[in-house]
Structure formats: C-alpha cells, structure tokens
Length: 358
Image (cartoon, rainbow, N blue to C red; front, side):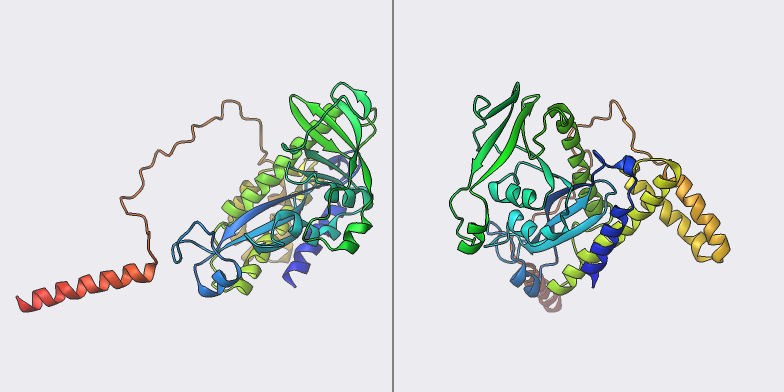
C-alpha cells in the first residue's frame, strides 16, 4: 500500500507540472542508486547483510535503493530495494524492475553507470529518450560513424554477448543494433538517443544533463534532512515500510512546493526543500489550533513564504573538507557489542568482590 501511495503521489503531481518547468515540453526524469544502513539485528542481517570487509557484529546491515525521480517536480515516481551485494542486486537490475514508470516522450538522465546497450535499447522501445555521461571503459572514436560536427556523431552499437543473468528469450527480444549519438563538451563525453543535432544542440544537451545533479541533492535531502540515512526499524519488513514512509512524506512536501510555485510563478527545483520543511514545522501549531476557514488563510500564507526560500547562486560559498569539532576520545568498537558488555560486567564484578573482601 505504501509503495502504491508513493507511486500515485509522484505520478499524479508530475502530470500537473507546468509546461514552463519541462524541457522541450517533455517530462524530465532521472534515476540513481544509494545505500541505507539499519539496526544490527539478526533479522536485518539475514536479508540485508553487512559488507564482507566488516567483522561479524561490528558492521551494520546495508540495503541498496534505486530511485526514479521526476526532475520536473522533484517527486519520487518509483523505487526498488535490495541487498547491497549478490546476484540481481545491482543498480541496473533494480532499475529494470521498476522501469514501468518510464513513459513515452520522457527524457531520462543517468550517470556513467547506466548507458549500456540493453538499457538504451529499452529506452528506445519505450519511445523515450535519454542523456547519459559516457562510460570510461568504452572507446569513443569520433572519426567513425555519421559525422554531425566536431566531436559529435551517430554510431551503431552492436548487441553484446548474453549476460549470465539474462534468459535467452529476453536476450533474443533485443535488436541486434541501435543508433546512438555520442558527443563531447568541455572534455566530457555524453551518450544520447536525441539524434537530431540541429534541433538538439550538444551544448544545450550538456546543460540539460546538469539538472541530474538535482537528483543527488534530493536524495541527500531525504537522507539527511528527513533522517533516513540510518533507519530505526529492527526487521526487514518494517525497514522497507520506514523507507516508503520517508518517500511518501517527501512527495507530499514536494507537492506543496509545486503548488506554491504554480501559484507564484516560480520553479520547483529553485526552492529550498529544507527551508520548506522548517516553514511547515513552524506553521503546524497554527494549523492544529485553527478552524477550517482559518486554515485556508494560514495555508495561503505558507505558500507565499515557501517561494521566498529560493536556492540562489551564492558566490564564494566554498569550504575546506575539514572537521573543526574534535571527536570524543572513545576507542573504536572492534568487537561485537555483547562481548564488550560481558567484559565490562566481569570487570564490575571483580571490583565489587575486591571491595567486599576489603
């Protein structure tokens, strides 16, 4: 139910987006992966085991999440959760399980992890388009293919060998070749399915790709501002519900931001998410203690104040990656907590015995 609510709130709000918020009049979506840790319980460790490099009882269970997000509104459209390691738990596999939220005419943005033959073929099949950063391991030779301009061409990608995880039936359904446009701007290589170089200039596409960074900021807002970085639930089922509730609350806040922007002619990704959360908390006592008619007035005032919290271009805002506050002088926990607790109890018993004998 929670997953369905997240998808419904994200999808319904994205459809109401103003045409001025879109790119080429089309919805902009992005996807990325992240990780979340949770309490160290047997139940969580069984489904979401800690990383191999950590000793048993020292690390925390860790889950991988992949999120598809509307970069037009900022809402979460769908998400998938899996262990951080093991077969079928990579970002591509999790993304494939929620690819139904991609619709015709969408423009998708993804980092250099995603532009594989199979993913781009699925984007083309959906009649959507994508802009991705080029993979470092792929050789981009701009002297081959159909020349469009300097460091800009269309090439044919051949279908690679069948991966072990893919069935033969699914593999055979993919085309043997796909047409892909590759271009370079400021030393960075990009891959896109937007082949028309006159309609979609490469510098403009590179500028659009920069919007993908909003997805990173939004994920950071959910994890840090909304305290989802470390979950509190002690079973996998409740941990998944906790993640869903965070995304649902996040979507509701994004819907309020979108409503404020639509009313006061602003752009959603230019409004501070953290500032909006602080405003909602500040206005909450007035909502609780007011009647229905008064609440409309308070809500209108809230929307007016939300658009004032704009994320501006703040020159000179650069800080060293150093910590000023000194850490507390505690040793690192290198053994399971129950062993250390038993050690302290034995030490306490020896002290009690020593004082009793004296």
